[in-house]
Image (cartoon, rainbow, N blue to C red; front, side, top):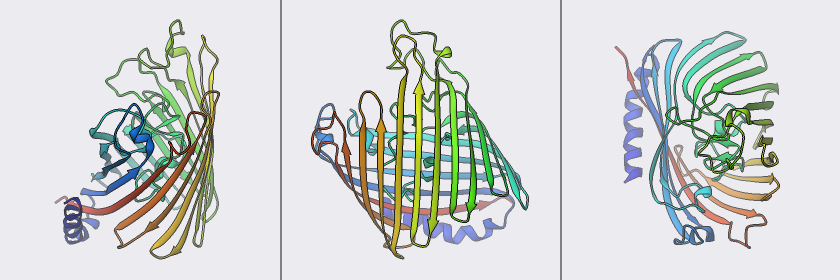
Length: 360
């Protein structure tokens, strides 16, 4: 049923999209729909205690409202069944979740050698580089790097309320972001204990296909309801989280390489500061126009549960808007028994859009 709906949407988009492309204002909608089946012993272990085989779906919707040549309202809405992400295999609960990952007003200005974009609203974190490839149609693998996620990771994949400025000049790109909470402990605008946090990044394109970058964030991250806020601890506003990272990407011919190294430090007074270092290397090779192979090797080091991950994926495109992935991930660490953390998954991804309506 989902596939039929998506195919109908693609047909409508092909009929409606051409006039809207020439309009100075109007509405458009594009998206990605993913269906996934996974096998993991972690699904049958406590606390989930379910079947080792599970399935789910995820829809990413990207509405855009172009107001004029310079002003745009942009959004990203995620709808998914739980469990869908690998990190949810070790948690309880089933159901349907909806997240607004982006919802911001943008002002943009472009010149021959540069650009300026200002965003205000709900934003993805400006730290690191993976969130630019968060969509299943763009991510060549199935899982995420180890520092990104929902549950107490260094970089939340959920949105942060705030403002951001992006600028490019020749081969340089820079970004600065101010948000209501830390990427290490994302809070909504309705939650208590919000404190301002800063994130910034810079990049340089050495040559076509080769870019290096660096980013950092700093600001209070704790709140009184946080699971790791301990009795007798200092006021959260005097305890910052600090993160620094470097990233790089290279593409040439059939090869695409990505990598990141990140260091996270969460400050405490009653216990030692929590320090975690995370890195990964990711490679994708196109075997023919329809087939590719990809792998990601990740390492996480901290004082409690150092882990390594090895993920391998084959991707096949039956059609231009369709992608099938077959992936296997090996997770190793002190708290993981044998193959308990390993996952075999098949993911089917369909893209659609843009569905466009031009303003009169």
